[in-house]
Image (cartoon, rainbow, N blue to C red; front, side, top):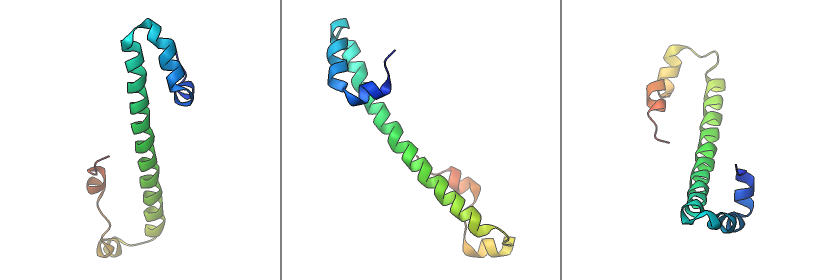
Length: 84
């Protein structure tokens, strides 16, 4: 099993080492790197959304339902429908 940190740090070295096993192994490393980059981007977006959610939650503490509606806070279903 290969460590993702090793793959990130030296992708060419890992590809060169795995090329002895065949071209499919080397291509798999490239796919892993692409998926890792995508995962890191989505994780960053998730952290930003959680931060916004926490800020909104703090702002709504002690508020009444009518004041929340007048501010225009999106419903939970609208938030969960956001594409990631």
